[in-house]
Image: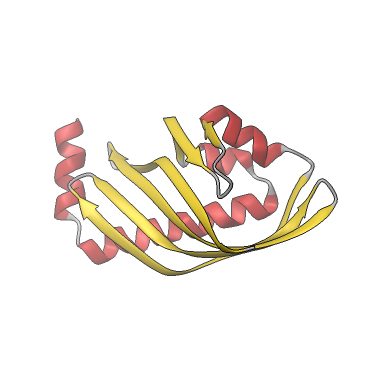
Length: 137
């Protein structure tokens, strides 16, 4: 089954695979703004490692709990300059993000870079690692 997924990942035109991953990244952002941890759970593999802009590292469970945290209220999230690189059934997605919202009643606005690592498992792209760093706060 894994060989079939790898064959699909390599036989599908790169532009179609790239469009799919960029769409998943945009859905990720929308899920964060709406607090939809179920949508994110469908995109995040187990195991998963998330490294935040401030250096905090979390696993899948802690990451999804953070999305459900009522203190976290993202009001805007956008990505740009998105680039996708493929390595067999793995994709590295990089770009710039801009997000605004409130956390614990305090407003925030961040501009940063992100790197997400996705793997194709049986025809489904799952994120296994995410890293962000601030450009400016």
